[in-house]
Image (tube, rainbow, N blue to C red; front, side, top):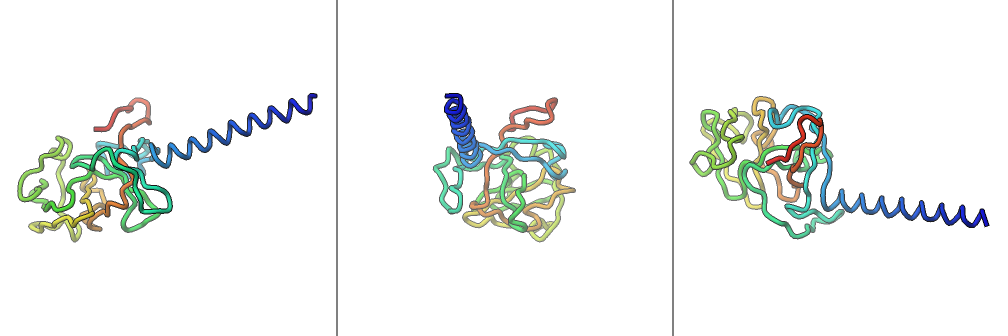
Length: 193
């Protein structure tokens, strides 16, 4: 009797743990994932060591081991802080700000970003940053057009960011999701806009 009850309790615990693990895996794969900021490329928006939650379902989560994506709630927009697989080092994920989408022409002139020859119409955090002309895709007086199926991203700390100015464009397929919440450290908790 005691032995049977003990086996029953073990089975209940095992079932609960398995269900919890499956739910956690599904949530991490399709809904939201935590990331740690490893560098100063997004200062002042994020500090080194900040931890953020990234929404995967907003842009349509990718089904593992395929190139198939679930339907998106909306398309990425200028000013969104996005997480993506590095085009240079596929085992690394990067956090940068989306500056231009497919078909748009980007130029950095006197520290300002021009989209299709005009001042950027993005958030104040983009307008207030000074962007340096660096790398093959960020040279002075060199406008680049974002090809179909790609994005152009920059770090908010332009002096200390390896971004699209160096490696070029981010394939849509590399996009993981949109940063939505800074949850650590506690004194800096906030919704990311």
